[in-house]
Image (cartoon, rainbow, N blue to C red):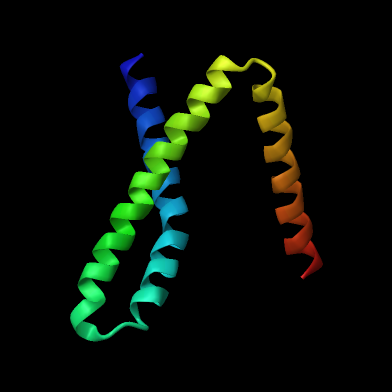
Length: 93
């Protein structure tokens, strides 16, 4: 059981790191356009804002899915549609 929990935590952490890469690119592209004296505060603020939004929206989404029974299948269908669109766009280009 402990091995399963550790594996689950590691997979979630890996997924989170992969999803944060696009945030890092967006934040760094914004920071590259500001003067160098403001660059570090812009980067730090962007990272903190992104992490806070990720935590907040994850908590809200998981709470809504837990409370509203019909939302779980709708969220599943939305994930399948988004995944299919990503695959379609990848194959098409």
